[in-house]
Length: 175
Image (cartoon, rainbow, N blue to C red; front, top):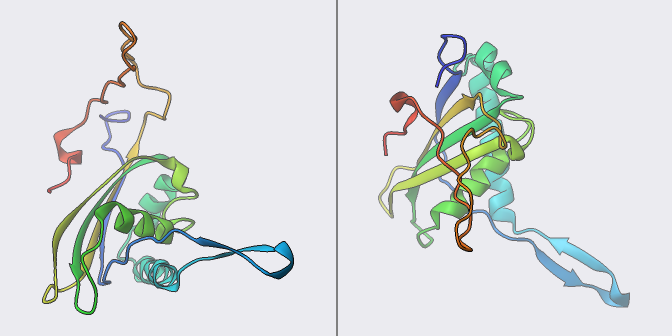
């Protein structure tokens, strides 16, 4: 898919961090009936580290600021690849690592994670001797959530299926 004959904006970068899965907050009822939410610290610390490392890459011009400014307000396709060290812990769920990393990139790479139309990831390797790394590919998208041209109509009570967008094969991640 091209915009006016030009390739879609894309950035790729790596974070030398050990991915930490996103954790759901715990709701606690205090004395007198007050309710407060406690979010586990490990995923918060990881999200902050993702933000710090990404900002450092931008400041060092390792992420092109012109492309970044184009992507900031676009709908996006995001691809993650994870290498995770499990020393001192157990293997993590890929979808939770995606969410935690995505939350760390919010307000730096994109304004809000609701811009992310397609998000996918792959855990390449997990284990106690794995060198941790997070690879990120972000591609701008011309179509928005509701711009898909051909929506199949429901047939005999089946749920409608959204037709995939036509993709340039270079936009498919290498995993």
